[in-house]
Image 1 (cartoon, helix red, strand yellow):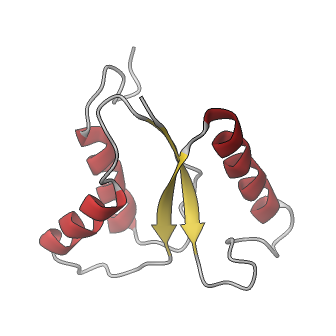
Image 2 (cartoon, one colour):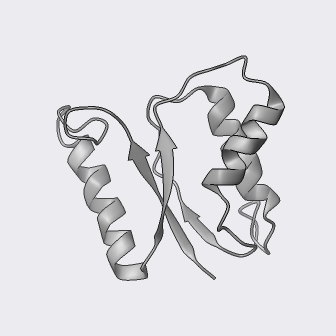
Length: 109
């Protein structure tokens, strides 16, 4: 089993969304770094991305790359909201992670 934590990949000045908006950017950064350090988590990159009409097969290829190393029963830490992405991107990410399966993939025990 591996751990994954969202890591925004943005072109903002600091490279981390919300960095200059109060404490929220630093808090996200600190949480992600803590999870990576304590659990030796992999980075699950999220991108500044908004293409609402993107064809389904493009989504599939994009997420094949993002989740290429993920396996059944891996644990994902997703910091919400996912910054600067479309609703379609978020839904597709959720569906792909859920599609990996596992005993608790719906949040039920």
